[in-house]
Image (cartoon, rainbow, N blue to C red):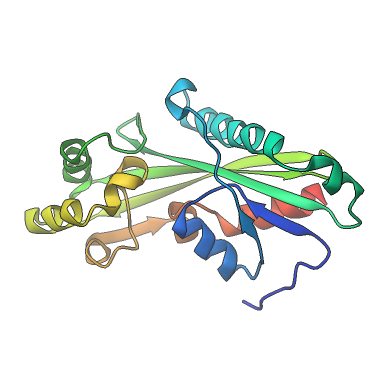
Length: 204
């Protein structure tokens, strides 16, 4: 994919996720980053789709007061703020980041020979016009049996503790045991490209 100079607008990624930064860079955008400091556990919704949308909106609302909005309104080109969230859904239950190594292990053991889904949200706010659009994307991941020593290595390495549902599919340790991904891999990694592109067009 060709890098497109986003000279007609600026981008702020409201996330500190390494995977999201990589995907946005792969899409050809230049951007700055800013993390939202919100109490994610303080926001509860029954449906995963509603939860991830509420969290992505809350992140936008937390970041906007820290920004020089008047300057953005005066700028010739708009500045777009992109905020995201993701949960894993397993057997109908919403899973966020594991609270311990034991919980991470329990999560991964459940995926072994089974499947889970990721629900990812993207909210794009045009800081010049105030227009905001958001939507969500869902992907199913099917796994082969994951050997105990692979789970041990994943826990030891620690990256699974920082992601929703302790679910990482791009990790070289787990990759051989991913049987099928129904949907886009970039969505599983936290930033669905096609959805992000559509929302950017909608707010401009």
